Image 1 (tube, one colour):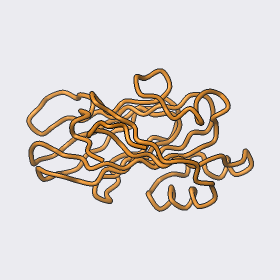
Image 2: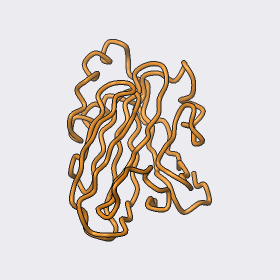
Image 3: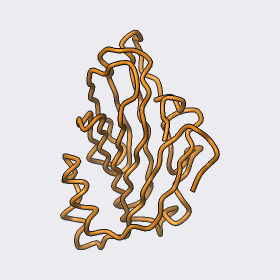
Image 4: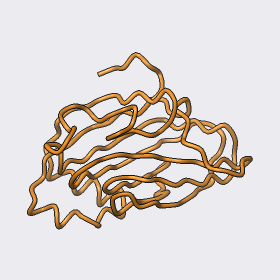
Length: 171
């Protein structure tokens, strides 16, 4: 589905895994390979464009919600793989932090920048990026209750974090 906007993430949604294999997934998403292996036991449901005109912040209670098929309490136990081209404005060391519910892995150009392994926990990471376009991958695992992702960045020339701007994300 296309939003008509030229900024955002493309999400592929997978569901629903069982409560029995939930235990084997919880707390075990440490790499992209772990995440992809977990998704092989799930059923692909839909692909959806998440327009992010302003910033990389979406989910329950946010301006940009998940597709209706995954909203509310009936939407527990699913996973999503988000991709976008990340356009960074300058070369240097970028610092990132994220708040997410339940588990999140953030990869840039196949490098694991950070992972969140618990609802509402903050995670920090960083990497050197050349000015230009890079591949961004977010793997989100929803176990129970709410689901959201918020990703912040600190550019090399700045002293404070800000939400990753929506215009840095090109599908």
